[in-house]
Picture 1 (cartoon, helix red, strand yellow):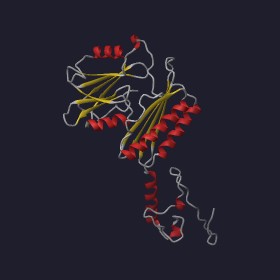
Picture 2 (cartoon, helix red, strand yellow):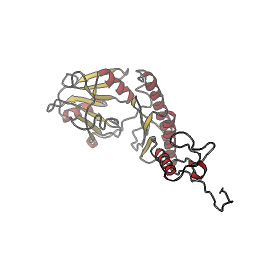
Picture 3 (cartoon, helix red, strand yellow):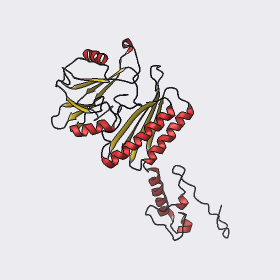
Picture 4 (cartoon, helix red, strand yellow):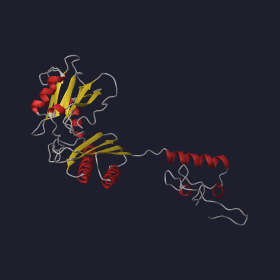
Length: 315
């Protein structure tokens, strides 16, 4: 406590702002200039500012601190995981988001522990980040332990984000079929079902832009609406080699099928997905394998939010 005891009055210092952690005694006013030379406080008895003017400046400063944009970092844990591993994942996600710089809007990390004994790398980590002026970047990898998966996926995500920011793409040199690609759980055919049905509004893209999004989002396939023709298109990675193939709805590459025939082809070929054209509305459809052994179905619609639900199209 400090003050002037000559007049029997004690000056009490202002408290720090609990939400921002900033000591108001050491803050400049909103105009960026101290109210009095050498004054480190907004105390009206020291600055000479009286009454409502001082309160208005203090309120403006508090509002500015309260509405400062915050980085959105979310960590989702699925399955049984020790508390120490979950805390480690949260700490690494926060550190990665801070290291990527101020243009990072949001970072998501999802850690899944598989119980299926057929999966030799049960710790699946999926991470995506939204960069201002660049767009989303996504990586999904799997290892034997949760901590190793977190380190690997966040390190890969940071590297791809930096390259995408500096060079505009992550390049075809990315090892798509690496030793850390997530595995599909071995589930009996009689137990498989369509566990997820996504209705999406396809964004209008050129083929080149669709390929860039395919690579940046670490997908096996990517649906889009061709900006020139308006037809539904599909770009996907071919294995081995990692080359990209472009297909269009209504062509021989995406023939007219029904859902039952598409599921039969998906089972017989063992491919990660099957694309076809629906005979009713002549729009593209994709039936894909999920990592839990079930299936997922993507069907374009005409109304809604563009790209809704497509960031995790192969989870």
